[in-house]
Image (tube, rainbow, N blue to C red; front, side, top):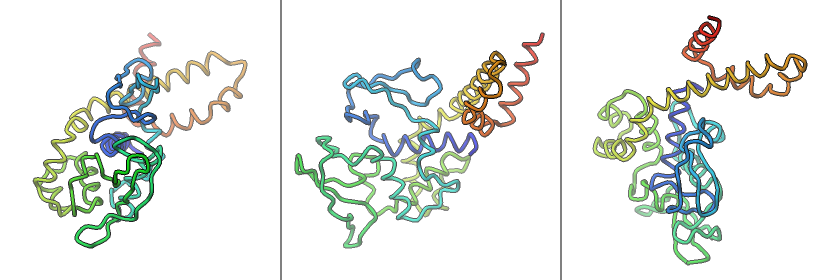
Length: 253
């Protein structure tokens, strides 16, 4: 997976999970969250819930658990399964009272046609909801989610709004609405890319320094950290390697 894909996946995860605002995955609180900068500096969007003390974040490890496709070509059934995989990753709960006690009510119908969206009724408060309730996508009746998901993939490229609309079959106005709603994800991507390069470089330097300072336990120390080593090799790109080389050369002087 390239760095561009990693950042795209993190941002799509964020859009689906928290399109109406970040909430605590444990207690679902919206009002007691504090952004954290120093606990996990190598993570994206780190927060702490002051109500239940949970520290949570989304990063590339979490996104690897989801069924992202490189080209964004999902069927409608796959797209909705993907949506539920992210939105309900800690289990389905009522958006109104946050109870996890619910009853499945089949699929949502629009104009008498069954969609791939699931319906639920909360056993605690009695209110009904579906997969899209209380998300940005709740009012997009009749729009296949696979096309919206394809749009999210393409917006992270250099394609114009008009080109994306033409390729997905969606109206230019709707594509513009998506771009405007989540512009913070797109505008911060360059900064995030730089941060990701820095993180991988720091990890690599730390790993090499630790191994070089522990010669007595070599190679068992490397074997114990083999997952880390494989991950580091997997995550390299020419820019990271070049920067690492330059740093080592400076350290020699």
